Image 1: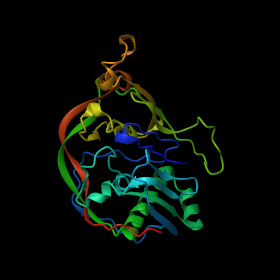
Image 2: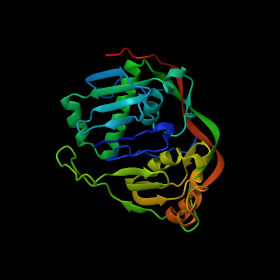
Image 3: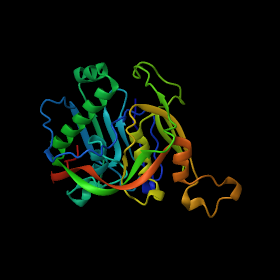
Image 4: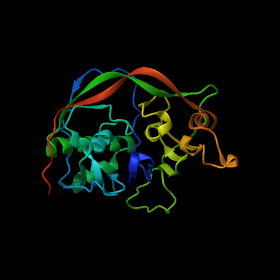
Length: 293
């Protein structure tokens, strides 16, 4: 399985195939300030190679391959933190403090568990496996980046994704119990979220968290953090099609579709509301550049 967010310039396109990033959406429930979770009892990667990435590269990716190797290419520490700590990938407001390089310096990582840890991970249900993998990343960051952080709740003005009148129009699905390491899938048998072009997002067994992350990249939302207030759990199939605001003046009249806000309500039964909400944030107390190896 592979989670691959392909980040283009200005983060306008994100594609996720065979996604294992099915995490709980950002909660609006207040969280007390807590210290970083101890990592001593969490399995660690046996070998981890960290090298400088290419800041000029047009795209980046991050995820786990079929052998549960954590691999990244040209990814910032900021993005790794967003992934490992279940933060919204479209906003950096949930990361407080730290030097400027965490959002500019890029890293290419290949972290490999030993055979025993790999076998243990494969026995876990998918959601537990994903959370265990993220805890392993947190341990890697503490070891190689000397990362120390704590959690705090901050109140922000946010865009809350809610259920519109009439109810959600999403098709719930179950993720099949497949050993992807032994069962190759046809090329088009992807799961997760796919954005083939601006104004089109398709979900196959996708979570609301994935949809929220994609919406966080849309210019129509003015860069304000989007949080999930739908209460929807599980995985869904859906298709969201709209005409981006930037294309309204140039697109032929006969091809102009609904706005993003209208499409959300008509096609998915969801809507955006502006509100203040407590948001879980991480505060960086200490971090260092890793030595290249």
